[in-house]
Image (cartoon, rainbow, N blue to C red; front, side, top):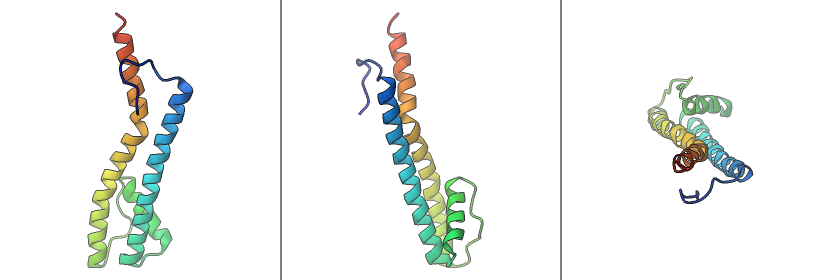
Length: 115
Protein backbone atom coordinates (compact mmCIF):
# COMPACT_ATOMS: atom_id res chain seq x y z
CA UNK A 1 0.00 0.00 0.00
CA UNK A 2 2.76 2.45 0.91
CA UNK A 3 5.89 3.05 -1.11
CA UNK A 4 9.02 1.34 0.16
CA UNK A 5 12.28 3.05 0.97
CA UNK A 6 13.57 2.36 -2.55
CA UNK A 7 10.79 4.42 -4.12
CA UNK A 8 10.62 8.18 -4.43
CA UNK A 9 8.32 10.27 -2.29
CA UNK A 10 4.69 10.11 -3.37
CA UNK A 11 3.54 13.27 -5.22
CA UNK A 12 1.66 15.63 -2.93
CA UNK A 13 -1.72 15.32 -4.69
CA UNK A 14 -1.61 11.50 -4.43
CA UNK A 15 -0.54 11.82 -0.79
CA UNK A 16 -3.58 14.03 -0.08
CA UNK A 17 -5.90 11.45 -1.71
CA UNK A 18 -4.32 8.72 0.41
CA UNK A 19 -4.74 10.81 3.55
CA UNK A 20 -8.37 11.56 2.65
CA UNK A 21 -9.10 7.82 2.26
CA UNK A 22 -7.56 7.16 5.68
CA UNK A 23 -9.52 10.00 7.27
CA UNK A 24 -12.75 8.68 5.74
CA UNK A 25 -11.99 5.19 7.09
CA UNK A 26 -11.38 6.63 10.57
CA UNK A 27 -14.59 8.67 10.41
CA UNK A 28 -16.54 5.59 9.28
CA UNK A 29 -15.15 3.61 12.23
CA UNK A 30 -16.17 6.39 14.61
CA UNK A 31 -19.66 6.68 13.11
CA UNK A 32 -20.26 2.91 13.33
CA UNK A 33 -18.99 2.93 16.91
CA UNK A 34 -21.22 5.88 17.73
CA UNK A 35 -24.21 3.99 16.30
CA UNK A 36 -23.37 0.92 18.39
CA UNK A 37 -23.18 3.07 21.51
CA UNK A 38 -26.45 4.84 20.77
CA UNK A 39 -28.23 1.53 20.16
CA UNK A 40 -26.78 0.04 23.34
CA UNK A 41 -27.84 2.94 25.50
CA UNK A 42 -31.30 2.95 23.93
CA UNK A 43 -31.72 -0.80 24.47
CA UNK A 44 -30.15 -1.32 27.89
CA UNK A 45 -30.83 2.02 29.57
CA UNK A 46 -33.95 3.07 27.64
CA UNK A 47 -32.40 6.45 26.95
CA UNK A 48 -33.66 8.63 24.12
CA UNK A 49 -31.45 8.57 21.01
CA UNK A 50 -30.12 12.05 21.71
CA UNK A 51 -29.02 11.06 25.22
CA UNK A 52 -27.50 7.87 23.83
CA UNK A 53 -25.62 9.99 21.31
CA UNK A 54 -24.34 12.27 24.07
CA UNK A 55 -23.14 9.39 26.25
CA UNK A 56 -21.55 7.54 23.32
CA UNK A 57 -19.83 10.64 21.98
CA UNK A 58 -18.48 11.51 25.41
CA UNK A 59 -17.06 8.00 25.83
CA UNK A 60 -15.56 7.98 22.33
CA UNK A 61 -14.00 11.36 23.05
CA UNK A 62 -12.47 10.10 26.28
CA UNK A 63 -14.60 12.20 28.62
CA UNK A 64 -16.82 9.56 30.22
CA UNK A 65 -20.58 9.07 30.27
CA UNK A 66 -23.03 11.79 31.29
CA UNK A 67 -25.80 9.53 32.64
CA UNK A 68 -24.81 6.87 35.16
CA UNK A 69 -26.20 3.46 34.15
CA UNK A 70 -29.04 2.19 36.34
CA UNK A 71 -29.68 -1.38 35.13
CA UNK A 72 -27.28 -4.31 35.35
CA UNK A 73 -27.35 -4.73 31.59
CA UNK A 74 -26.69 -1.03 31.18
CA UNK A 75 -23.76 -1.16 33.56
CA UNK A 76 -22.22 -4.10 31.71
CA UNK A 77 -22.81 -2.44 28.36
CA UNK A 78 -21.35 0.87 29.54
CA UNK A 79 -18.26 -0.86 30.92
CA UNK A 80 -17.57 -2.86 27.78
CA UNK A 81 -18.40 0.09 25.54
CA UNK A 82 -15.99 2.29 27.51
CA UNK A 83 -13.18 -0.24 26.98
CA UNK A 84 -14.11 -0.52 23.31
CA UNK A 85 -14.32 3.26 22.90
CA UNK A 86 -10.81 3.73 24.29
CA UNK A 87 -9.41 1.29 21.75
CA UNK A 88 -11.43 2.79 18.90
CA UNK A 89 -10.05 6.23 19.69
CA UNK A 90 -6.48 4.91 19.50
CA UNK A 91 -7.14 2.92 16.30
CA UNK A 92 -8.94 5.80 14.57
CA UNK A 93 -6.10 8.18 15.41
CA UNK A 94 -3.55 5.69 14.07
CA UNK A 95 -5.49 5.12 10.86
CA UNK A 96 -6.03 8.84 10.31
CA UNK A 97 -2.41 9.88 10.80
CA UNK A 98 -0.53 6.85 9.43
CA UNK A 99 0.00 8.47 6.00
CA UNK A 100 1.44 11.62 7.60
CA UNK A 101 3.83 9.67 9.82
CA UNK A 102 4.86 7.48 6.89
CA UNK A 103 5.54 10.51 4.68
CA UNK A 104 7.65 12.20 7.36
CA UNK A 105 9.68 9.05 7.99
CA UNK A 106 10.01 8.36 4.26
CA UNK A 107 11.25 11.90 3.62
CA UNK A 108 13.68 11.63 6.53
CA UNK A 109 15.01 8.35 5.14
CA UNK A 110 15.44 9.81 1.65
CA UNK A 111 17.29 12.85 3.00
CA UNK A 112 19.55 10.79 5.28
CA UNK A 113 20.46 8.45 2.41
CA UNK A 114 21.84 11.27 0.24
CA UNK A 115 24.92 11.87 2.38
